[in-house]
Image 1 (cartoon, helix red, strand yellow):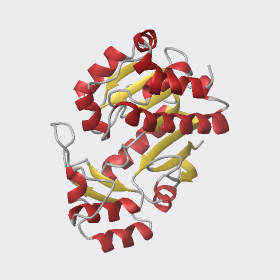
Image 2 (cartoon, rainbow, N blue to C red):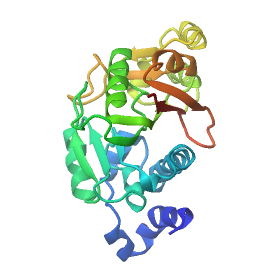
Image 3 (tube, rainbow, N blue to C red):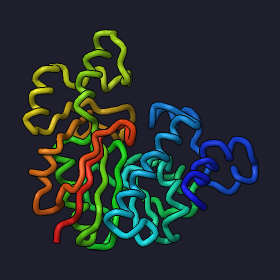
Length: 272
């Protein structure tokens, strides 16, 4: 099945054809979709599908194809992106992981083709050394503190084989300005509560980003698992990743293109 047909089945076929809906992974309830991704239904699936396409492209370019990979969706949530990979990745080689127990249980029940487990705020993961080919994170490094970020980079380096890929999104530089606009009541793409509290000194934060520094505001989020000691809003410039990932990952791409992904994308290749 080609990519466009696969996307149509998820974005349109599920709503129109009951047999299709019965075969594909189920969606989370609408309130959970909105709470975790900011949108629901076709809108949130379209965003997830776009990132799926990007990951497949990177796997084809650097790993010879996604169908050759053992894949982990770290921070899989309710399985919005994980669902698309069931076509490509052989059963038994597709994994998901999340910190929120409710979402782990939900994804296990709606997507029997993936193995989904819970992770803690900090490593380790329950994978042997060098056992994975590709790890992707959508809107995870957009939120972690610098300490948590660095700990997970170490862990991803442990479980990825040499040459394996790490594909992670982070908030772009404009996010700092969007937070200021939201606080001031001006039009802004972000309106969630933590964004209103993030980067209170806009000019200082922009200068830090331009200097290649890790930019993070500890805000926490609703629920018992996403606490302010490790969770907030985060912007990571390419220069930071190139400097701090060194020795563990080579940064081989940095995608700052809203036509390809709503957030910036860091692509790292495991050293060794």
